[in-house]
Amino acid sequence: MTANANLFAALRAAFPADLDAAAIETDTGLVYSWRDLDRASAMLANLLASLDIPAGSRIAAHTEKSVEALLLYLATLRAGFVYLPLNTAYQQAELAYFIGNAEPAVVVCASRNFPWLSKLAFQHGVAHVFTLDDDRSGTLLERASHFSDQHEIARRGPDELAAILYTSGTTGRSKGAMLSHANLLSNAQVLKDVWDWQPGDVLIHALPIFHVHGLFVASHGALLNGSKMLWLAKFDPRAVIERLPRATVFMGVPTLYVRLLQEGGLTRAACARMRLFVSGSAPLLIETFRDWEDRTGHVILERYGMSETVMLTSNPCRASDGERVGGTVGPALPGVGVRVVDDAGANLPADEIGHVQVRGPNVFGGYWRMPEKTAEEFTADGWFKTGDVGRFDARGYLTIVGRSKDLIISGGYNVYPAEIEGYLNDMPGVAESAVIGVPHPDFGEGVVAVMVPKAGVTLDADALVAALKSQIANYKVPKRAFVVADLPRNAMGKVQKNLLREQHQGLFAR
Image (cartoon, rainbow, N blue to C red):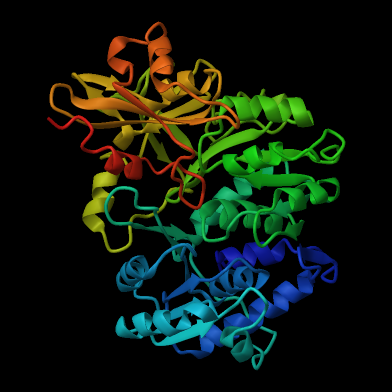
């Protein structure tokens, strides 16, 4: 009989021999053993199996972060169903679209949202709606408590669906990326090796679990290594610093590193036991990269991935594999193909900017119920068009320059926002910036800069633009610049340039 390709089977096989050892310790002082994870996921899997829902059914979770929410994910895999995590920030109209599009058989939500969300779910033909709160209460756990804590892991083939992740939808409708058991397992196994996971590693888990970074990269990393997690329901910089002496690995988005650097308690001594700091989900400013090394003695490892592909590239972890270079996301991971091509699809040499395309065992099978969109996003020779623009250097390290949809064409010239942002971010008093293109009657698009000052600094936008003129070609210089208190971001810390474009849409209208 062929081996069971269910991702949960691989995660369960990696549990340590001592099932009574601590697997997860929460910020409220609760400790879950590996045996607890095994038993609780079995009970939840038995509950799901008892509902008599069709094979391949989607289980939608719109819940606050909790260990029980993670257990629901593990139980969904274990029972052979398809997990559908939904961002807790999503509101009624967004959820109506996701539930209508994915047609889940089960929806799990916070009790406070049950009155309207259950109504919405039932209108879309969802048969079962359960509640789950972050204090271990809710109808899901009440029902599961009546089931056996023994469960035989459902057999699944490598290409069968494990999860659907809706992309953030900064342009048009969100698309459901279909990820198989093999997509997720292959990536977790590669990262285990590349990031040099060690016996005794301890992960501080401070990320949300409705997203690739927190749910797959962080959770799978710890589970596949049999490593303990120090679990924070929400990111709190002081709580993270307090746990650093008991941990070895931390994963965060750039905003979390900026907030940690604002704390006096972040010192070399606090980080002495730490082995690895990973950053992703949004670009890390070179200033944050340098400040972190100065303060902690650690060099942040920046990597690159997407909902459709999990991780694609990574700066080296081991010194023997090369240095970590700020501003880059490193070389392609083993087994993953990454290429940079021009508009005609021809490979570009080092230092030339073009479209980033990828392929490998981690790359998703397509978008849920969108065959035309899926066909559009893959090349004839099977490479996925990431929508990112980047360049390789001579060493094969990739730098992401921006999204192709953020590319500005002004007067017939290509303007890459990340290049101009790099210059602005280096200017005195600028904390961060975002560069966008908006309609312009003469140039097609006009370049606009939006800047956030450092604390206590007053910025002169016109003076900064004047200073840029000596550094970059005139067609790249912003035609207008604004100073704001902060930039709009989504839950993973990505700047929402679509909102900035909407705000400044009529700026150059005659």
